[in-house]
Each structure stands twice: as structure tokens, then as C-alpha cells.
Length: 328
Ligand code: TYM
Image (tube, rainbow, N blue to C red; front, side, top):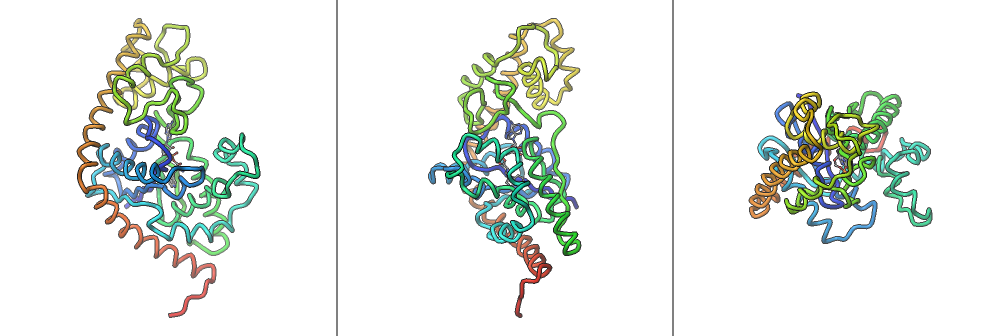
């Protein structure tokens, strides 16, 4: 059976980008193999975060996983910090990734370019090491993610290759899995930039008021043309709205072009807003139900036990392979 593994870091409110690029993908793969998900709370410490916010965000992510339709009887969910093997394996694996390659990672460059070197925490630099540990701990086959995380999976693959060349077939080679349409949802106010939790302008948050969502979509930045046509380079705003619409309705881009041929942008935006608010309204209603029960804690507790068992075995295998002494 194939094993899927993925995570979201609890650094802020979840966005429509997280939902389409990641969560909806998890839902569609849930019946196709084993799905292990976690909340990457250790990764959220790489930039300053308020403790109360971190705790709330962590709980919310699990509630949104379940609200989106991930079945707690089929999937496993846990908190990264509760399975100590992630940290232990990262300490070992940091010796197999190099400063040069870590410094070239897009995320590291993006997040630190405006910072003073003296104030950049080590964690943001070694972020890919911990993420590699997350992935290989579970002998993961596939890592369903949005496009921005592919580079992290690629560096994990480099690490696995390097490690196995030295010690034999110890780590499983993972593969990133991105959706064809919706792996990169862009900001509504600047469609050349990715929609992200840390950039509230032009983002749709899953807990936004529906009226606000409607307003954000109706005022999304587009071009001066009037033709609903997909062209990422010249019409990034309209193309982004088409991607969102396509991801939520499962209609192909060609079908959407046909559906709106001869229609104005306003009409198209109204329809996008209708579909997005309808989906988010359902999500919010289920979220409210779930957050009032003890389900989140129950699922996390079971998930932790399940994950710990697998993680302990992999860590032991690695420790033995590299020669750490173990007495009986
Ligand atoms: P994070 O928390 O930034 O994002 C969570 C998931 O959402 C996807 N995503 C998007 N997809 C499409 N369009 C967007 N605008 C958009 N914004 C975010 C991300 O690609 C991601 O799939 N490093 C990871 C968390 C992590 C992880 C892991 C993932 C830690 N360990 C192990 C997989 C496996 C992160 O920061 O995701």
C-alpha cells in the first residue's frame, strides 16, 4: 500500500491556497493508500510566533483537516513536536546536507532577504533538514504538497540518495505530488505573488467572513481585456480565478473558457465568488461542529501513538546503519 505524508505549519490562518493546493489533495487521495498528516509545529518556530497563537493555530489545522472531509477513521494526524523522533533524526541528518545547498533554497532566500544576518535564526536555515526527517521517518512514497514545497522534497531526495549511497538502502525515496491545476494559487491583489498565510492582502482565509470573501473576489486585480481566457503570463489575475474555479468545480480550463465566452469579467467573478463562498460556508459549518467536540484531541492522541511506532523503527534503523552503539 502506498503511503502519503504531508503537513501544514501553524504559522497563521489557513488560506484558500492551503485548501486547494494541499487539503483538497489529501481528501482526494485519502482512499488511495495510507494518509499520514501532521501539524508542523516545530517548523513554525523558525520565525517569531506568539505562543497562544501557535497553540490555537495547531488545533485549528486539525479541525480544518476534518472539516474538509478527511475521515478520522482512515487517516492519521499528529503534532510534529509530540513525536520526538523528528528532532532526533534531524540532528543526524543535518550532517548530510550542506551549507551551500541550504543557502540556495528559495524559501530561505525569500524569508531572510530583508533580514540582518546577525538576526537570522538557525532554524530557518536548517528548515529543509527537519522537513527531510519528517518525510523519511515514515518511509513515505508520496508527499502531496503545493508547488512551493517541491524544492524541499527535491532536497530530501538528494539527501536520501547521498545517505543510501553511503550506508545501503536505509531510507525510502519519496516523491512530491502536486495537483495539475491549483498547485499555486496566487494573491488576489497581486496575482504575480503566491497567496500565503503571512501576506493578508489579497488572500482568502478559510475563517473569513463570507461577505469579505465575496468582496475580495469581486475586487480581485485583473487586466484591461474583457475576455475570460487562460494566459498565465499576460492575464495572471483572470488565470488565477480560473484555476480557483476549476479546482473547486472540477471543470477543465477549456470548459470554463467556453462557459464564459462572450461574458464580462464581472459575471465570471460573481460565479467564482458563489462557488468559493459556498464551499467555504460548508467548511466553516463543519469546523464549528468539530471544534466543539473532543474529536481533535482524540484524533491527535491516536495519531501520535500510531506515528511514534513507525518513527521509532526508522530512527533505530538509521542509528544502527551509521554505527551508533546500542547495548541490549
Ligand atoms: P505550509 O504550511 O506553508 O503550506 C501548507 C501546504 O499548502 C500549500 N500551499 C499552497 N498551495 C497552492 N497555492 C498556494 N498559494 C499555497 N500556499 C501554500 C503548500 O505547498 C503546502 O503543501 N514546509 C511545509 C510544511 C511541512 C511539510 C513537511 C510538508 C513540514 N514538514 C513534510 C510535507 C511533508 C510548509 O511550510 O507548508
